[in-house]
Length: 289
Image 1: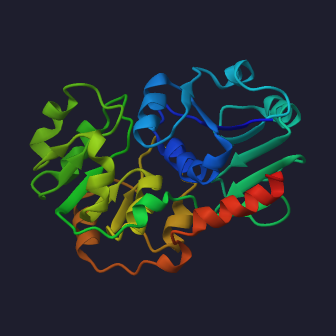
Image 2: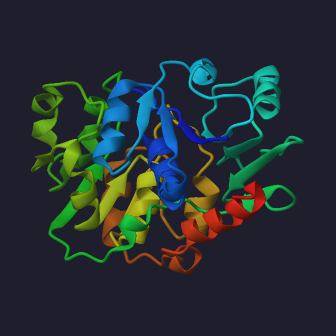
């Protein structure tokens, strides 16, 4: 019986799920887990983030090509229907699903990790990599991170909200080559995606359309503000608001400037560097590891 993690990734969905899964996966290193992701670029990048074993499998339905019946998988994806969901529960000895949907429910035979749900077969947890709880000196005044994906180049329209407001841009992992040249007129500086951790940790104000990045910025004391993209789910609204992270529903220059400049009241007591360890400890008990 082996331990696997799976996260949906790709140039249309970004890396939020992978970042979340890696945070938990670090707590299981003694079991030599293998990370499966949707594309080979993400698998390679995961190794740069310290994951020892990772592989791209193209399609979630290819998991049985790598796993065996009776293995354990910790699964973060929406790539399934009702039938497939039940088949995965029956195939794996333990099927652990990461969910951020506040309306979700637990199927018989699975364990769900959720920041919202509570009850039997549920681990209530916010998954943030302990890396981001480091307190670094702040070097970057105002940074915007759209997310790791922008296949339709929607940022070209939304970036108008940042023009002449002295923001820097942190590029996304899947941004097209040369995209920075199209965006440079809106931002003071543009940092490559490989600088993600450094820039997030050292930002005074981190404005983002990635919910996971907003959580990481809160951990890093980088004054996060979240701007919702119309191509993303709104599952995180309640959680972000509970944590005191401002949630803007559109790219309004006035709202962005006003929100960045106002003093925020973050509820940082709900997150700490032990949260993911506590979740992993509880999960190990339930998995008999």
